Image 1 (tube, rainbow, N blue to C red):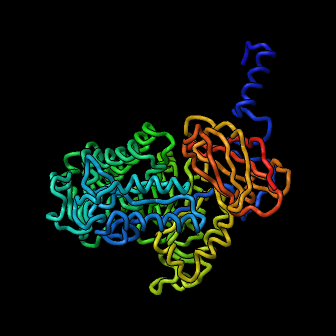
Image 2: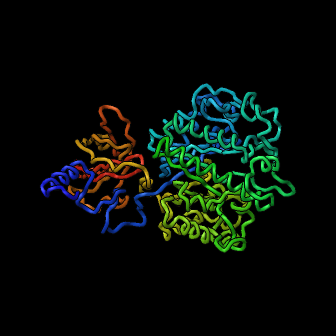
Image 3: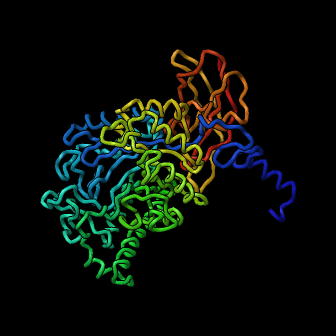
Amino acid sequence: MRGLRLSAVLVLVAGLLSTGLLTTGPATAGGGTTGCDTSPDAPKRQLRADWIASVVNIDWPSRPGLTPQQQKDELVALYDQAVARGLNSVIVQVRPTADTFWPSDLEPWSRYLTGTPDGDPGYDPLAFAVDEAHARNLELHAWFNPYRVSMGTDRSQLAPGSPAAEHPEWVHAYGGKLYYDPGLPQVRRLTEDVILEVVEEYDVDGVHFDDYFYPYPVAGQEFPDDATFAEHGGDFPDTPEGLADWRRHNTDLLISELDEQIHDAKPWVKFGVSPFAVWRNAGTDPEGSATTAGAQTYDDLYADTRRWVREEWLDYVAPQVYWNIGFAPADYAVLVPWWSDQVTGTDVQLYIGQATYKVGTSTQAPQWADPEEMSKHLTFNRDHPQVDGDIYFSAKDVRANRLGHMDLVQAEHYAHPALLPVTEGVPGHRPRPVTRLDADRSAEGVTLSWRGTGASYAVYRVDGRGIGRCDTADATHLVGTVRDDGRDHRTTEFVDTTAPDARVTYVVTALDRAYRESRTGRPVSVR
């Protein structure tokens, strides 16, 4: 502003204040406040999600061959369950085995829809999944397996005309399954193109990988990529160490290229990976965790997950810390601090993958017979502010609620809604405050309406007439969120069915796709 006259500066500042792009108070870019006491029982921002797996029909559809309506009803029930449990996101598997849950120009329909390779289910499951998630203001992360082709080795069962059938030289049998060869540039390009097809054509909120890259080692078998290494190994030495470094390089290329491609297409779409939680044991590498796990992602899956965090190729990492507190080979209480250290100083968010499937299961360690084990994990996380949320595997186990463990999680940790964490590095700025906020009480509750330019909105309520600066500092007064539907010239409505029969005051804030929160606008009171 050097060279501007003071009067011009004052006019410019006033204009910025009127739009909400500049504030006089201590509100942060994420909509938080400074100098306010907050409750650990009401964190304002957390990702709370479950995985909805489609491979071998783990979660959805529950079996192949259901009618379109039956499939839709099942997914809606899983979404409604997520909302009832206080979750705000779902991770839906849409490419389980080089086949798709959308009408792709690149790969066949998934066998897990109809039971037949490339069988048309009669509707677009991904479009339905996105629409229904957003109708409930659930984020939807599209979950892809990058290289798995089939859960068996019978190539005659591959869909005719599919890339795997058309290019048998791209595919290897290993450990009773078929896999694409990650060292082939054309395979990496196919995986990236399939993912970009979804990012460009569907309003997904995230792209998600789990722990599968190169396959887990199988005793007595070697992954048969020697010829690929000979052709594409470049300057990597022809040694076991050179082969391992080359394989990691291939996986690094997939992650770094997708980071660029996804964010070039839609900067707000998050890219995350949920790896096996042990990067390396400290006995292998002093930089590793104090664990003695039987697998290490760096050495066995050729996935240098720590590098991906340090390079900030990911928006989030969600290590699968699938062990109880006190499990000596891989202690939850060791791995969460280790991962917290890895994300410190980066813009990468840390979520923890939780083994809901182990709770109350007779084949698991005795600690999983404790209904409080899962809740203890989330309590432990509170001492590590780098942890931004949790993902539960999987939706059917959330529904099963064995030993009442999800009831405890909900009562002790999810008593209030939560906004999603702010995604750093997304171009833009927080939205302007909402306007024309109005409230009307009826037998159904209090109906709020307003106008705004947010992608979604947060609704806060306090008893009485006044609302203070710190009342939006945590989720104590957050009663709900709603996604903008874009209708009626940006007018949005929300019905508060829990409002007490007394005078209450509301404020509504707007959030953009990166979850930057606006200033609070004018409050409204209603009796």
